[in-house]
Image (tube, rainbow, N blue to C red; front, side, top):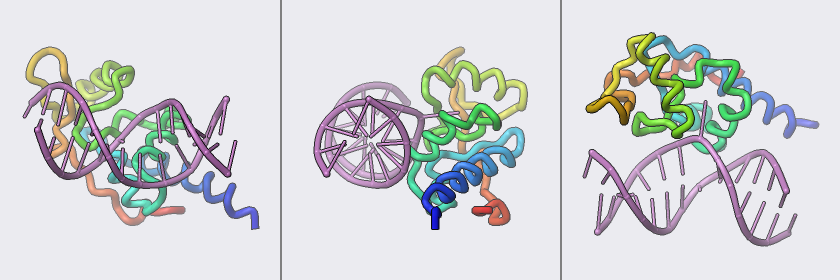
Length: 113
DNA sequence: GCAATGACTGGTA
DNA sequence: TTACCAGCCATTG
């Protein structure tokens, strides 16, 4: 019954799985992913992304208000411009994703393996 | 076992 | 609109 360790691994796989299948030009929030998995919370999703997110399009998993942590913001902007993600930038800075337009509903087929 | 930390969220001012 | 606050939950020291 070493389920606990297995659950942690499965949780990571599920989070990465979701991040991987978010289509270009769309984005989901940490809370959205956590609510979909019904597991942990937004901070746990963020923790997984911080550790294993490098292997997936992490810029498609963002905060509920369409912003990102500062160090990531600058990197994500380039990807958004390249993918044509709907942005809500007023001036040259303060770039944030327009979640109303970029919102993406996670298909249930992506649930926990 | 307790305290601090973090790629968060929603509400109020 | 932005700024601040309290709540939440697993990980780490």
